[in-house]
Length: 469
Image (cartoon, rainbow, N blue to C red):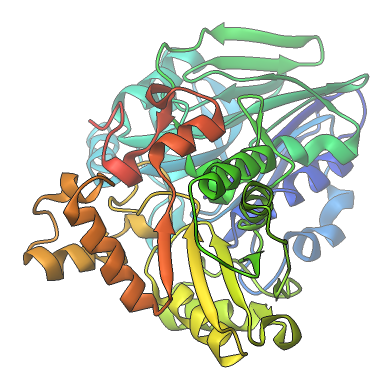
């Protein structure tokens, strides 16, 4: 997905910038980048993070970064930041973006006699494209609105200028931006937990489509928020770090409420409930309290050296990572009936392999409870793994088998009251190989988040969203 961090301070910023960026490591493994402004020069460095960590790549370089302001990113897509010299002046930019019409916009820029100097995996770098769209504007606000107007997908960005940092949240607010403050300055980030240990406190959240400028004098609003909010529900379900808040709603509290709601409406008999770590932990604790059955960690994640399993490029790599990082506890599994809570089912292969492992290690019964509804649509707005091809989704392959067409009657498979939905869940249960399988409802998701459905993007569950273009 990617996550960024920026700072404007009265003192040298590199230490806070370095750690603030690093606290976004759960959001990307492709590349990392830092750029600071020292009063005269933009100092930039980018490294690949494949097979390594942000800290190990940048720690030795920190002495070269001077200045009181800077931005950085851990990206799961393109190499960033990009530094640009234009009629708007020199600036550096980082983005959290997915641009589905990149080829069309690339052609438009080339026809406009602009050029591209950066490549990302052999293609146009999306962040450079955003920068060129900005430079088509009369000023930064005009240029950012040009991005909002032309890009299909989503774009949130930080722009480092000689006098501060401009933060612009995606027009529909699909990805978050939050501002923190202490006595020496301001930080701006994708994740609010990223500045807690740096002694900043949350000042406020940037609204959808809002543009603000952060200087040593304070935060100035350059453009008011738009009237539509479509923040991604999957931030709370999966992506988000447990200590983070989005729209003042804590990730772990949402997961607890989500699990509690599911537990209230379940009747399966089990010896205990366990999470598939890490994103299943909050849900499992809530489920445990609602059902009044013990919470037991019978599967533990071995986190050192292993990345998130959806990020490696090939399916075989993903399956290998998924298998190696989860360690079952034979002593706690043998002869037990267990409810396992997990965040989602995407391709189905990872959970199927995990389930086989649970039975192999002695579990008598395995009951899977998924914290969200079935994923039936690829994401058009975030770089989530299912977005490349909807037939990567195990649900769509099941619909293909049931209907002969992966799109036929698809709206009925989104509705838990239909026989089509029941048939889908049963086919998934057999594919995964468990005793029972249940998914949470969209109504429970919205209630657990605490926002009305019209303010949350639920496209991956029901195909609906504002701004689909």
